[in-house]
Figure 1 (cartoon, rainbow, N blue to C red):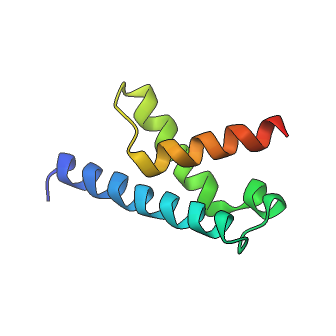
Figure 2: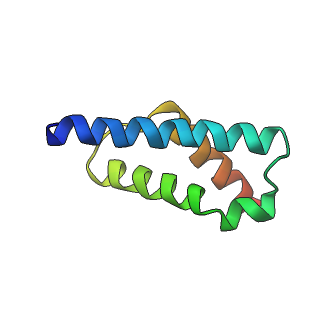
Amino acid sequence: MTEGVELKRVVALADQLAERIITELENRVLTIEEFGKNREVALVAEVGAMLQEAGLELPPGIHRLGRKAAEQAQV
């Protein structure tokens, strides 16, 4: 596998994970308190930060999870 293909795979997996986390939040499987301490959330945030640093667009799931995190930070 080439480096570009591997990166795309990592981003796709992080985006899927972000969508799953959002679903868990919406279905109240994951509480707001757990959200702030969740390792999976931290992993997705790290991938999102790396994409932003590289000047790349965030996939939809990662973008939505970032908005949810920002909303929670304001509460």
